[in-house]
Amino acid sequence: MCTAQAVTPERPDWGYLCFPIRFSGAVGAIVQWRLPRAQQGETALVGAEAFERYLKEAAPVLESKRLMAELKESALRDPLTGLRNRRFLEESVELLIARTLREQRHLTIMMIDIDYFKQVNDTFGHDAGDAVIRFVAKRG
Image (tube, one colour):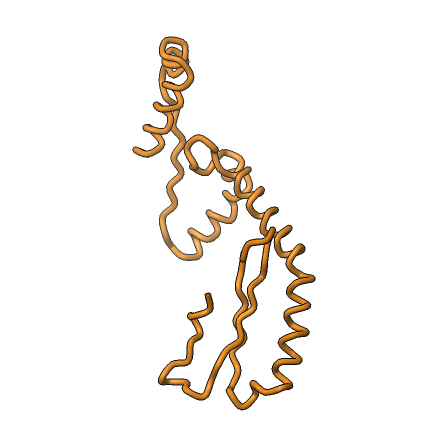
């Protein structure tokens, strides 16, 4: 689970402790604590136990923040296509323009209107209409 901070030839005198953070019974994040082997004695273990208790107490707060971020992200994307929606544009256009000007880059915003789309839904049904929307979204 915690191989990212494995002992390397460049730092053979260092080790690490690994602390999984559990969200709803599954590992949702991992905190790795790197420290010199000389500091990995009893003092480090006492500190690690306290840190692990802290992480267990903080886990519900961290999970709540993660879920709120997911909820916000889902409100800014169209569920059918996965593309950013109008709400995202309304909330982000000023930041996008400022970043574009600051970085001297180009910004493209594309809004598409599918002509006679109502006829597709009326003639072939909403499932076919959804397929058309997904097809157009992938081409945009």
